[in-house]
Amino acid sequence: MTPSKKRLVAPYMAMLLAHQAHVYEEVWGGFFLMGVYGLGPFLLINWLLFCIPAILFYGVLLDKRWAYPLSLIYVGFMAVQGIGHNLLALITGRYFDGFAGGISGLAMFAIGVPLFLALRRNRPSRA
Image (cartoon, rainbow, N blue to C red; front, top):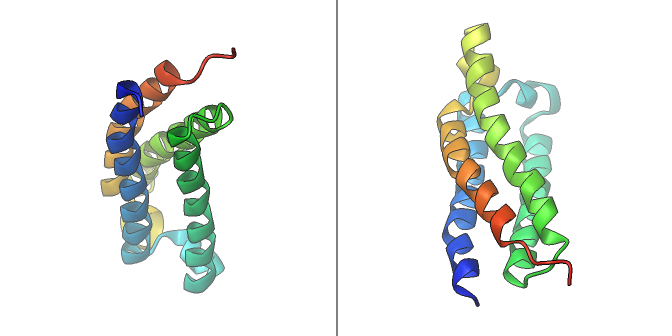
């Protein structure tokens, strides 16, 4: 593994950890979608949505070209979502049974921005 690839491991794993903490916080705080889908379906959907970035991380470790643009989408989405939870909670005044997920959302944003830039910088060339 190249030194630049080694620098991606810790932040990518931190993002995956923040992603899981985010789901936990949504369940704990009663994110409004749980009222729409129910707890079981909500957790199943989130489990599936976690498997995708785990596969992408593996693709990045193997230096697969397809994994980088898809990881950029994932990381960018998670960073924006993290800020979105906070903005919507502030706008609506509802964290519990509303837009829970803001605390871990800040971590996703803080991890996501530098990880996004690192993924862009380290993606394989088109050779």
